[in-house]
Amino acid sequence: MLYLVGLGLADETDITVRGLEIVKKAERVYLEAYTAILLVDKEKLEAFYGRPVIEADREKVESGSDEILADADKVDVAFLVVGDPFGATTHTDLVLRARELGIESKVIPNASIMSGIGCTGLQLYNFGQTVSMVFFTENWKPSSYYDRVKENVQLGLHTLVLLDIKVKEPSLENMARGRLVYEPPRFMTVAQCASQMLETEEERQEGVWGPDSLAVGAARVGAADQKLVAGTLKELAEVEMGRPLHSLVLIGKRAHDLEKDYIREFAVDQATFDASWQKGGYGTM
Amino acid sequence: MLYLVGLGLADETDITVRGLEIVKKAERVYLEAYTAILLVDKEKLEAFYGRPVIEADREKVESGSDEILADADKVDVAFLVVGDPFGATTHTDLVLRARELGIESKVIPNASIMSGIGCTGLQLYNFGQTVSMVFFTENWKPSSYYDRVKENVQLGLHTLVLLDIKVKEPSLENMARGRLVYEPPRFMTVAQCASQMLETEEERQEGVWGPDSLAVGAARVGAADQKLVAGTLKELAEVEMGRPLHSLVLIGKRAHDLEKDYIREFAVDQATFDASWQKGGYGTM
Image 1: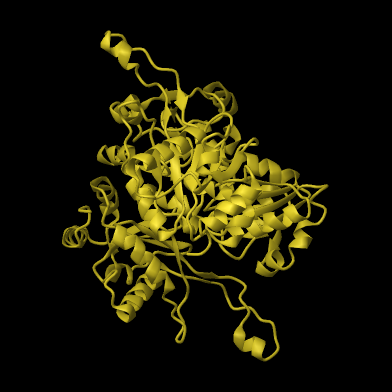
Image 2 (image 1 turned 30 degrees about the horizontal axis):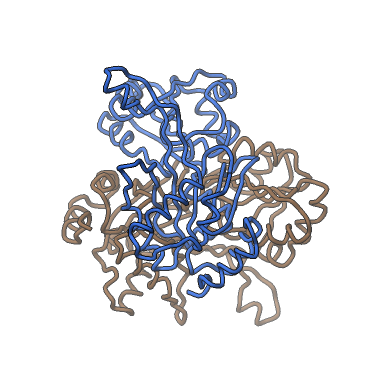
């Protein structure tokens, strides 16, 4: 049996009791370590599980899944995923490959950022589609996400923006020299996301958002040091939220007063927040 | 401290390790028992926690929250919520009330149906806003949900439909006679939802969906006997999915082939499914 076990969002104790039982008994335990990270390292997980954990990078999962699935028709293999196995990154491809090989699979759900973002007090009912923000480079600033956010904004819905992480990315410079060297890990911050959004708006000029649009930055959702900050994109572009992972929500205009009451507690500046709320026509759609 | 602890979706072992530690140590433990249910009863939870659990119905949470919050500035109170505390039903009002009383609160996230529905293989990125379906009566068939689904459909997005449950609802007939008697619990099925949707379309006639529109019914997400069924609304209106809780996803036309490959495995009839997929123009937006 292939078990896809969600680890939740923060640390080793966020696994469910059922998930932990499976990990303790499985023949092999893999950790998907390229689309999200926990706030603790592999050694801490191993100590908590009392088991060795094999790190699975993108290559191992996408091209080498047969190693992961080897013998899984006879023994139990646990594939651990930060968040939920079918959340922000879905591992349907691994399950489909298992199906082809006649291997059964079971999913152990857990908190995903897609629902954990409810901790902002913004109602999940009022979210439209979710988008991802990649790191811009000098020559590559993809803005296709802008069109999707626009659809949400026109309906007055909130948008969850998931922020890029780069873990174990080969260094292009070194690859050119024939060496396989990895770049140090990078995690996008709320401030980077907000400023890239302002850059895209400057380029596209369709008025989907602006410096005074309200958003909420969320860092380390579910952890003891979880941090929420509400403010305008201009304010958030300057905010310091600490260590990863970060996410951002662009607030939609259909927002309710109850949502406002909840988030203004986290405002960079409550006066600016109230003024932007009123001027932006939030709560009026 | 007020702890809002998510219990996940299926049984007593879906609590996280961290959540369980909190429940074991809290002075009082409440279970929110009116917006969702686990597949096990209170006695099973109490045996698992080794603690008494106080059932909190809507009245106790909405009007009597001061009882729940009593002394929570000095002792730890755990408020257990099926799914995630800020998922389908958010308990922001309880947290706001705690704030007013100077009581700190912490949330222990868990799987919510809002992300757990990813088990269908439909990508959470491609979902629009979520809607709720209430039980229709002879004289009350609210169709405001239709407008919201329409917005999703026009964008080609999937829609998660959460189905009504009635737990501890006073019997109107008995209330009229001055007696407080509760109706037996009721849980909407996938079949009921699909046929109410067809009824609404018949009334509204805007062609947002029809008998051949594709949808996925999901029962007991995350449980050992989780069941998924894909088919047309006409097919789903006849389907038998077993005990609660059920949910339904109306598939959007932006669907990818990977999503199709995953869900056709669960089709009532794969030939009908393929024909409806092609005829309906799924995967072409």
